[in-house]
Amino acid sequence: MKNSIKVLLVAAVAAFAFQSCKKCKDCHYDGPSGEVELGEYCGDDIENIESSGHTVDTVTYDVHCSEH
Image 1 (cartoon, rainbow, N blue to C red):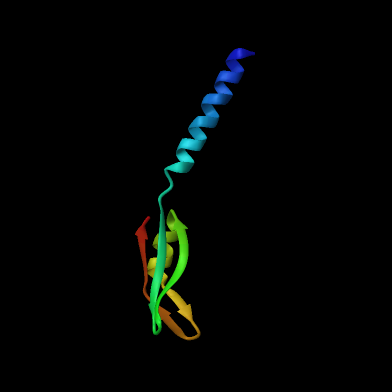
Image 2: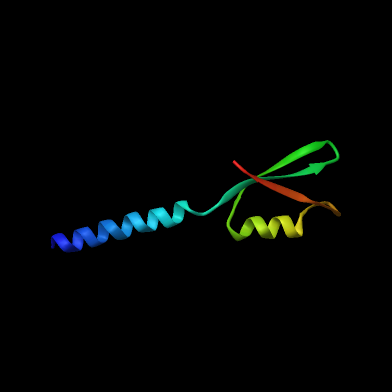
């Protein structure tokens, strides 16, 4: 029984540690009236939004993300 608890505890700590390694960045684009914050993006979402940009009406703006 004690070994089961130890295994579960180690698994929980490992899962938390791997989740906290996920890199997140604050993203924005430069609109006509200045910088517009888009919020925080993590993992593959950062690459996706930076490569596709952010579209407002018919205009697509370059998105820039930086670590916080």
